[in-house]
Image (cartoon, rainbow, N blue to C red; front, side, top):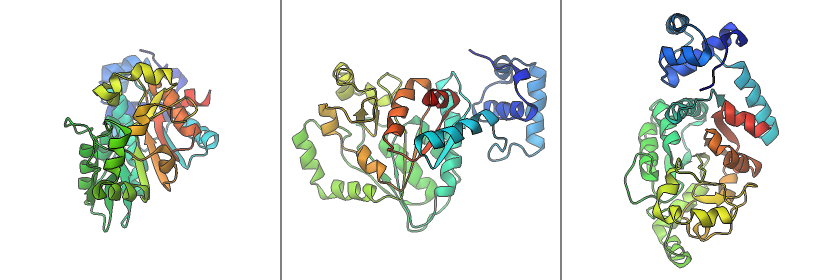
Length: 315
């Protein structure tokens, strides 16, 4: 695990990094000590001060200078409305917690009455939703952006959209179909079903979309389902490097010519691009290539990611 020498960090930046690692990522004081190359007693002292001086309340109010610089450069490089960059972690679960915290902070002020909010799926998104302040939005709805899996999970499309709607006190609309159909013909039949077509149309009219993405490794839940796992060699041969909303993309962000892309029940990347406000919440260096493809094609206009990915995107 790489460490950051404390001598390279100004006082406020050291306090901010400790705040992220301790209060959001859940690292122990010894782990932070090892990571930052400072005494554990100093970590303990700073963590205690952060609690009492108001620096850590509901959110962390100490921006990291290095992250702020990356945010500004990413906004300019990819034409984004807003960017939030968090410290990187070698632990995927810790990274998801930090991304979730930042995602909720970016999303929260965008939520209002009279909205249609569409949502994808994944562990990072559920982390963001759990960090949101519960409220009651008037005349608002949450819409699932893609079909579901046959097995239950809080990271499934149904679980994520249900949790989101419950948090916002909003109605919830599901795409009651599998994420992938057996054939192009069966997909066509399903899309003619009034319930499915109405929800798909509602998603296309949404004001705000919240999504994540995945690569082709086993770290991405979508690659573990049989219909995808069995076709991974074919997808790679077609040039696929990852997916967004179940559509597999090449390095330029173009959907690859593969049957899975023709049988997926989900909003297309092109339709996602038309949503007024869209947030991609995703991190981890293994996703850097697909995140870059998504940003290059302007499928989303807001981003939450981590330092290592941000640096890779700017190389």
